[in-house]
Length: 153
Image (cartoon, rainbow, N blue to C red; front, side, top):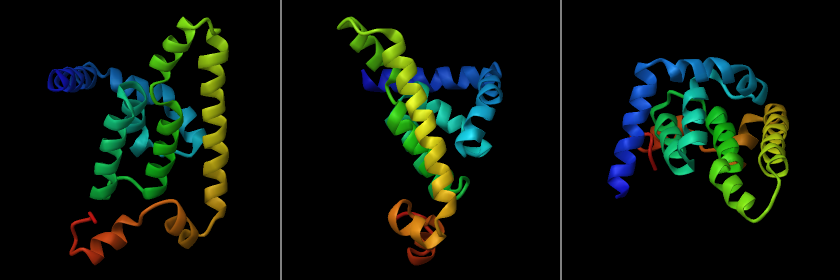
């Protein structure tokens, strides 16, 4: 069943790309993600992660980071956003069945996530590269050099 679900999600993703709906979503969300400090290279992967789930989007981000296509800072910011916004639709529906208000669940969580990520990315820009790579992210280029160019540990 998991294989069927993943196949359907990947097919849907390809259909969205073919219909250029993915480009429209990226164009609409680019100002928001720019405000959050997430580059255009990580925009589509962030959107995929928010809509299709943390593990799927996170897996794609990790793969792109290892290949060197996306900066580690962008991956870190995007994964933090995914961590705060994952399953936002399912969580909202579940808590609403218990009688909660939509605005308190969905919009407050979304606002908190966006504000937190915007502040976090600005604070990270003030930190030295050594501090960032030591405590928050993995230097893929350094790892690739140590592991014979594979980019993986």
